Amino acid sequence: MIRLAEQFRRSLAISEKNIKIYYSKGPVIVFGLLFPLFLALAYIVGRSISLREVLPGLMGMTTFFTATSVGPSIIPWETRSKTLERLLCCPVALWAIILGDVLSSFLFGLLISIIPITFALILNVGLLNFVVLLFGMIIASMCFSALSVLLSAYPPTDIPATSMMLSSLVKFPLVFISGVFVPIEQLPSWGQYVASLSPLTYFTDLARQLISGRSFYPMAINFVMMSVFAAIFIFAAIRIHERTLIKRLT
Amino acid sequence: MEPAIKVQNLTKRYGDVAAIDGIGFEVENGEIFGFLGPNGAGKTTTIRIMTGLLRPDGGAAFVAGYDVTKNPIEVKQRIGIVPEVSNAYVDLSAWENLVLMGKLYGISERRLQEKIKLLKEFGLYEVKDRLVKGFSKGMKQKLLLCMALVNDPEILFLDEPTSGLDVESARLLREKVKQYNRDGKTVFLSTHNMEEANQLCNRLAIINRGKIAAIDAPENLRAKSMELQYIEAVFDKSLNMKEISKCPSMGETSFSGNKIKIYTANPFEVIEFLVDFAKGNGLRILSLNTMMPSLEDIFIKLIREKEACQ
Image 1 (spheres, rainbow over the protein chains, first blue to last red):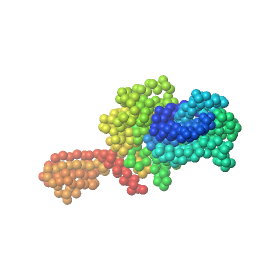
Image 2: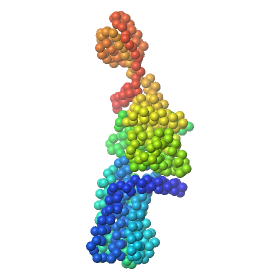
Image 3: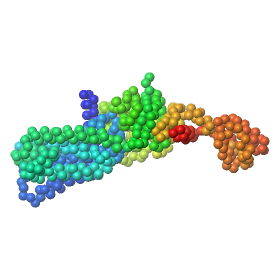
Image 4: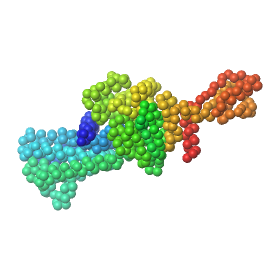
């Protein structure tokens, strides 16, 4: 237990290092801030829909893009600069390194996602339960961050742009099938089935429930599914990174 | 007392190629052990296994009393590593790099503050808040040594630590290695710099194509290679090659004008012959030197012998 706590402390040190180094990197700014902003503007501008209708999708999109913007690039970057080898030389378990990356990605996602929720409060949109929404946002950010670190596991490239591009190939389809633009209940049955495979679906549905009062899934299901996805992504990220590690070092 | 490092029948393959092939050696506590070999010989792979970065395909490595495969975290906690390629975080300052390392070794905040002395010792205190991306190669290498020392390790692994450094930085680093060894640290030094190995190491292992060619003290390795000694003599006139070939104990010989170089395992006989030869032929010896084999000569000889056996 002491060992676990010690490894967790080392994860926090890795996370702190990531915040100092990677938050200001160009691709993170582009994919984590500018991209969701312009996508949101394209979605809102010129359309006569109420803020209450727009906000759940906007929050889902913001949380998803920001929480997945840091993760895919860290390990390729560190492979290239050989700092991954430096970390692995230290008495830190691989799971602790991965967790450190997930935590830094999570914090970035959470901090930026606070912006739309603050807008909602300022504009008095009338959130049904702010605390539950914040809790949902925390779980969603953790889930998406874990996904982003998983996306950097394969192929074991040392080119951040390659990892970013490949992760975009996964991220964009997910945005379109997750009820961000069209509520899930308005999708055809096959669309609803496909949507259930995306972790983003459950956060968008939760946000819609807490903002406009209607949802497709019960709230508990949304929380459970996001947590299950987060656990699967973290576990898979650790396992795949373990397997691909030797290719990164040689 | 248990050795600081014990390697037994260690093997690592990359596809069909054996990077290291059943090597074994021991490093005693407090020793500076050199690991000498050409590029691609298996030096870095061996270090990576001993430091818990790679898993071997066969054999075992024990470092600081722990099996590296079974207890990699315990091993890493007790060692410090200066890798072949500089890998400090260039977007962090020197002090931030040191603090990060300290935290990754579980060093408390209070003890970490004391580690500033390392930067002072290596002349990096004045630039401690500067980003590492602006550092010269020598400064980066000094910082890497500071980072490797942050946990006060029992064993230091140095992989080509002075490669590409200017003379002054290389000298400082060697002095520091000697100093830390005097303070009780065991040093495992991988290098292809013969002179560095000769200056620093108590014992040397010579590795080629994943196999150990020899392990011994540098002076013993020299003694084992007596036939690599040579006599270099300069006469006042050019020589009669036919007469000279009567010289006893003569190995490979080369002429260049009035200068002769004779390899021999028995330099005394050759010197006596050359003196008599000069007297008998009305020649004067302008200079006469017995040259001991350099570590490089021994290294090449051992590698060739090993290759011939394979």
